[in-house]
Image (cartoon, rainbow, N blue to C red):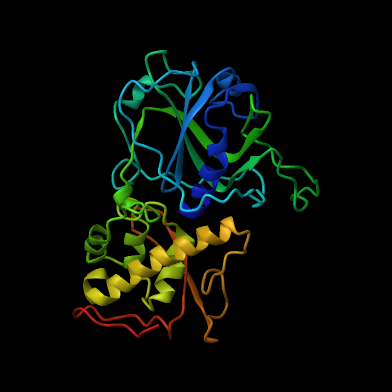
Length: 329
């Protein structure tokens, strides 16, 4: 699924539509009917980690019933158009469960909300958007097929939701899961792209006696961090993915957090400048030093298994005897 930098970009694309009324709808979503958005006003857009939250109200002047978190401000204000091509609907990755997911926590029970119906008039109308592997948002345009499918057909991706606004523009959502949600309670201290990201909390999490490649994907401490950032940060910090956090020196853990934040910000900056993402190890056959790259699937016994790329020479595996410093990058 799209990682933090991509969802931040989606938030940036949606933000100009805040304050506008939905005048026409479309899309293939069956669980959440597109017609339910007709005549609603988009009043707020917030991002946290890999999730996008949109608030819709029936009245232009309607205020939230309870205090809700302010939108997290983008790091750059330059207008940009998303040119990432969606490859069409595909299987969704399993969603993390309530325990240990680190996702925003609803302020009240979600049982009162229905996937396909608008919440009652006394409830805030928050739409939670979770993007699939090739999820994307397009502005005033539709995604086109880049290649033929397995049957040889050149079929354009089918949008899940299309919203036309009173200002004349429209948004198109692809390959995502959407549901009405209670107001999100945002915790920016665990968001890797937030100015309030809590380094101390992240470092403490990394000191656990478990493989660091597991901890990095724990959204409770590294919200927005996905498989690409995981692989790149570990390589740049010269840390083997299966190294136990408790066996790393404090300086090695600090270097890892530095690379997580630095790579994430650089990736987001590249998106706004229309540049290609620059990776050193992810999906590579050789590392920048010319060494053969290894690839294997790692993950907790009861959790999601993810492909991991690493260089055995640049990222040597440590013994479990105690904290050790790693080769400098």
